[in-house]
Image 1: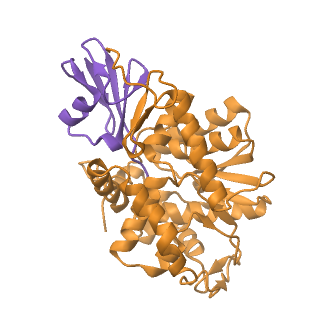
Image 2: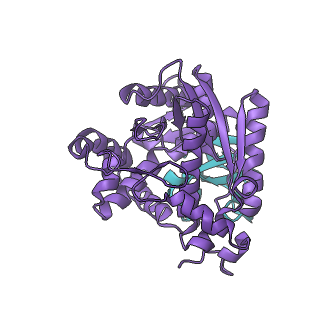
Length: 324
Length: 66
């Protein structure tokens, strides 16, 4: 490699990354400074966390969840991790390894829940048994178990590693459908209400590329390979679309999502069923639900009674997920 | 120079003497969705890559629709 001569905007030292949306390049140290400031601004602007909060971080072994855990610990917060073994073949085995190594190396507290061991199913089986696409079965399981673990463990708040790209892609999908209920709930802070714990997303001002760079310059090993059964889903195609726009118009993703939060979200406040309090208690587990039996209890009942489905069965010969 | 690509993991041989941005363009990859690591170090778009360098092009897009 030949030195490029490009310099950090802040210190004029050798740059490691260019960030077109900031029209700047940064060295490793000042990239970290930028990330820390963006997270701190999100936490402050949306009143996400208090210094003495007990935080439960939902960790997957990917860059975002390990980065946010790292950043919170560095910032002095009390943050424990929760990892859910989803049973997605080698991908889950590898992901769990990255999380355990991260926690062990830093002396952090990590709890693990294995879907197969504790609930009698895994994500591939749940997808097959319920007819849900794999990401739907996965998301439903994770949301419920993170909520329950936070309530049972006396945590003040659940932190997830959702970043600007994640939120912009979800916003894009919700807008394409004009799904007012989901749009009204798409906030970086969901307050504790109706039996749900408080949930926050401190990385909403940071892109995936910035989070991957954070991990690289901090020496954090994470699972780089994509989940084999997430490949080709709509969410990823929305991200690709938005990145194509971003390449032509740097800052477009931030403008789209942060502009929504500033100017559109206030107009939608109180428009979701959850916000209006129109919820019942699940007759089986007591969790909040819009029906009689919650979606998680229905999923567990069907999935645990189903013969285990290996992840390979969800893939076509071309490596793509079979869609129903 | 050797270039490691991911998802799926594979290695290709590419002629050196081009910038990081040019490499991504030549591979048809979006700069916003990738980082480039040269000889173990993260490098910016105008860094020049040469024969003998070991390159990793790391995708940064991830996530399910949850």
